[in-house]
Figure 1 (tube, helix red, strand yellow):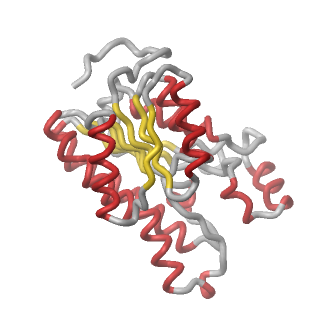
Figure 2: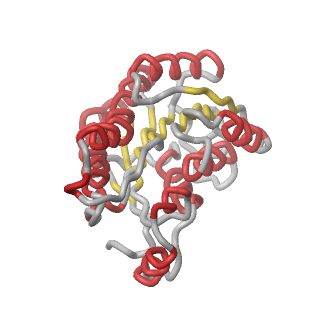
Length: 257
């Protein structure tokens, strides 16, 4: 277990090894950069965007941290095992896992097909479940680990036209709470960050009018940024956050309280 030091705003994650899934763009990329800036060595996982992932790696390295890009489909258990093995060989055994990779969907409930439902569940629930299974044994042996799942505000409150998506992200919250109880005695914390409307390409499915309405409905008067999410993740990943487990932090500008 890393030495517990007073909260540092410089390099509090020095010596830590982080895997961030879906980190080639958007929220995942910002999380990877933020963890690297805080001193962690970072595995930037990606599915298809190799060039973008390598750019994130370069940015992470510019902060003086080790970083690698590894391709893996995190809905595939064999690919997950290889991802964790390669990370361990190249950087060390992961002490931080950020389950960020996922999919969004907005459509009428009655229009949702079984294949679409399955794809959402695989990306948003199955992937975090089995990624966590892959890293957990080494964390338990070390009696230290930080697992942060990226859920959604709609996993808390439910979203009209986003029933399947809300169900998958709500399931991730239940997974977070249950696993937190199970592994707390082993020194591993499990928490979730449930963002509100964040300015990434996941909002491309919304019209400009929809986005303006979301902004008006958000008490702070703006949409969120990936850094708003990454800041919450950094707090939960800190070695001193050992009394925070099973919690859902929702950076949403006051949209849901």
